[in-house]
Image (cartoon, rainbow, N blue to C red; front, side, top):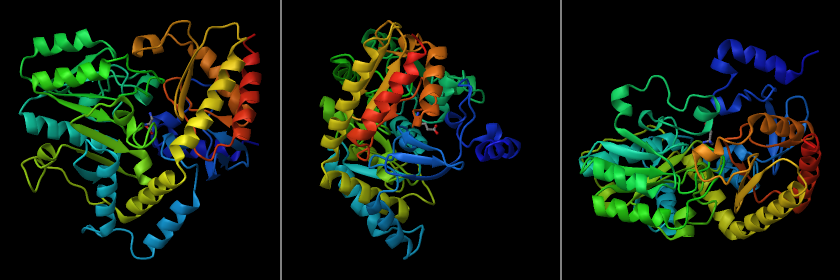
Length: 427
Ligand code: HOZ
């Protein structure tokens, strides 16, 4: 008798393309079907067949306190009792804007949207409107949602499923996107030389986390800041994943770099659909109705999303979540390195705070090309080994793992035993 998940997936395949509402959930190339979730709490998820997993995906980032934290549920219930959507301003939007501007000083003004994709898309339009220029620079393997201009050499599901350049993006659009290797400042300088006064912005994940996880070389971000300023282009940080996670003020706080615009999402919605973009007031004031750049949304600033996000962010601050996440991350890394130490095959382990990634490659991973050298077959069998033993890591080599403040040291040690078992098959 097929499992309930399997029956649901068979039905889903008939009515939903690929059976999923976002390709990263499809488990393709892993020798497994996706499972369907019944409920989630803390660091754990349970599928509809009653299997329990320690979860390191955390809804792809939003669940920084773990699943269904009481403070967030209470805030949603309390707010929902007064209505779920108004399409007119509500006080929570102002509270959220004030909190974001306080925590992320490069953001002087902010606008709420409904997803990270909307946030990056709006940043690009605003950058083009502000500078009067058309071209943008992005980096190979960085993923900024499914924005036409950014589905060029894109990471995440686009990369996992072998379509980093999506069909449906007209060549004329893609021609406005200059895609360069991450960490290659000379390539950036050359692009500015070859496209004088026509590049509106550079957009990047300051810590790329959609082709696995790797890091900017020392001074790379600083050099990007300088090149943008020198060439009259805007610097846009996509902090949809790193925002409020690697530090209270995101990667820009960690590295001490001020971008002109920042895209946010995930954590600020407390698990509800949300995104935001903000930055210098003189740029943000180009937005309608102040300025000529149009951007809008029926559900933008939705009271439930604002309440959930505010509750989550305030709780993170109250418990000093970033310190807890670093402690958990450090233990996770210590365990991982001890476990991997005896592995005969090559590996690279990366971590920053509560984000981590394991590659099966002998070479340092610094960009998309080096991330792609990781052995996909080895990743697939590692993933299956962990899943079968009750640990759920992201179902792709080209994603990042997330810890939450709900992961206990005991969970992490249990995970380590599972990882050891799952790696044993390589020996
Ligand atoms: N932004 C997520 C991490 N790569 C992927 C989520 C999705 O595409 O569904």
